[in-house]
Length: 189
Image (cartoon, rainbow, N blue to C red):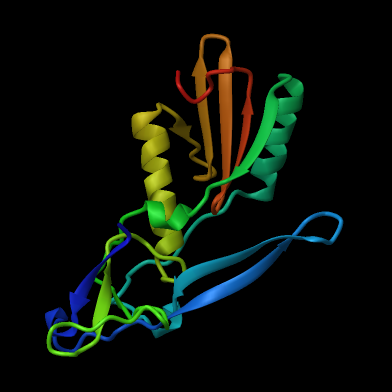
């Protein structure tokens, strides 16, 4: 799971509790009609304390020149282009600090002494300061160590994998991924 429910007395003294909230969005179709209603539980990162709840917040994004290079390579080598958004990307990565979050309104629970329970994060949660960087580290590890991609030296959001006559280029912009490939089994070889 993304978190574990703990009693308030399990929190170290002096630790601040991060606030949380629900974010609501309406997704529209191209014609302007409503496609769906979307809600996401997020931590209020502004209530985190640097050095205690997080150390690094930086997350690289694909440079525009790298994106143009990926498109040029795809056109020059007649590669298939695909784009996708990783669903719940940030919650795929483990959190790097002990972060305690208030449950969202309507989901509060009490312990056996009537005190409110809190959430201790196990995974990065949208809204935490380090979530994007943790996701990027997890993706980079997966692509390079498990799948054999080489990370670009000049742009850490660009990955390449070649195998005989097959090639796969990956460009990452936060949780959006662009693939340029000439293989039906591009992510399995």
